[in-house]
Amino acid sequence: MKKNTLLAISAAFVYSISALGINSALAGTSEVRSEVNPSKLFYLKGEAPTGSRIPSIDATSTIPFNKRFEALTAEQQNLVKTRFDDLHNNDTPPFPTSGLRAIYKPLVNANQAFGDDSDLNITAKINSSGFVSGVAVHNSDNPQLVNYIEQHLQQVKFEPANCNGVACDMDFPIEINFN
Image 1 (tube, one colour):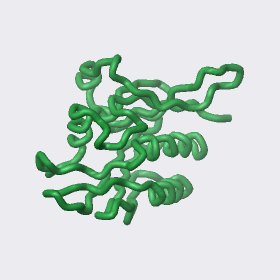
Image 2 (cartoon, one colour):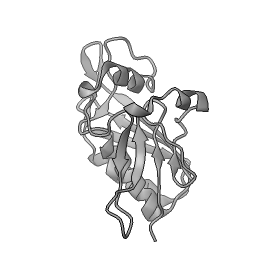
Image 3 (cartoon, helix red, strand yellow):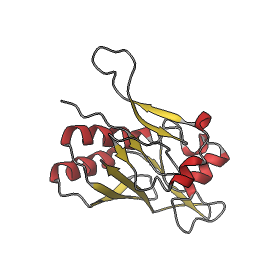
Image 4 (tube, one colour):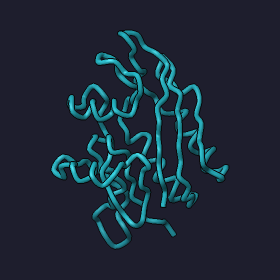
């Protein structure tokens, strides 16, 4: 049986609360959540439950799941940048070329498939060409989940970070609490 999940991805990325689901360790405090304007939320939709044509909502976000970094508004870009230390004003972090959906939809699916309720801290090392050069999955005792995450992230193409006008290596942090 499929477990219904809801994914909350970072205060910079997502605003969502659910008793069944995946809540990000990055989701921040209730004070941060209360400041989010619900009219500016974006949805990562799942499958429609049996007997319905209305798809489930796997995640809600203040950052669109289907946009590249440069297509985000200045406000959305600033929210993303808060997840990265030492970025200067003109620097940009690495970001999936097809948007956050490329990362988070498979993580929802992995949670459904493997049923792992671990708090995960994932670090994807993005090289200056935009490829994932390494993945570290922390806090999981499920080797199948770790292997899935590593294999999946290796396939995601990123726009590389830009440091002082030059493409550079940078870590892309992902923190998720499956519960």
